Image 1 (cartoon, rainbow, N blue to C red):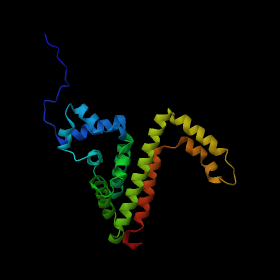
Image 2: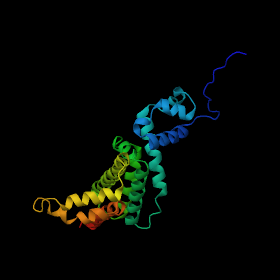
Image 3: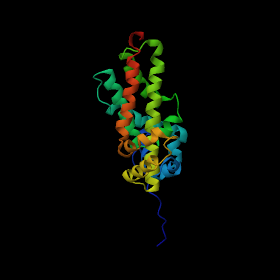
Image 4: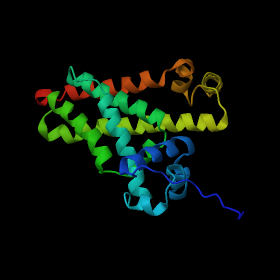
Length: 227
């Protein structure tokens, strides 16, 4: 009987762009940006790289498409807007949690300025800024201030979580050690850091993030009517 060579089974269902994007998100979540290759994606989808290229131009296109899919889901998860302030908070928190769940998302958004994923977030924020009564000539500035804060803080929080996992750091122990180090800094050179060392030990990242959003919103409310 002749020897047979086993070949990888091929998918029986049709390959779609959405299927490819979903598989890319799984790879990004489990292996990070470096783990997203067309070879790994083809193996996961049980297909050839050529079939993927039929739907996706290149890795940058795929990276942006994956980030856009996450942003769309986050916007859908944000609850209806009862007030402009609540709407801004909802969008901000939805994106904060999305970046926490998908740490690569911050990098993807920063590498795609002005593209659809970022525009989706800006659109939602901008509508609330308009509803808040911010004068039209200041709405761009206001929406960008919110967007930049949202992306910057959410992205840094996600990056910190990745670093902690890679180094095997436990949050409470890490913050306690850091707070202790701050409390021993030179009192004349670092009076503020010493004063807030205890708050560093017990702070909540999500609550701090939303407090920053509220501060920006309070500032925007002062722009109503040209005040």
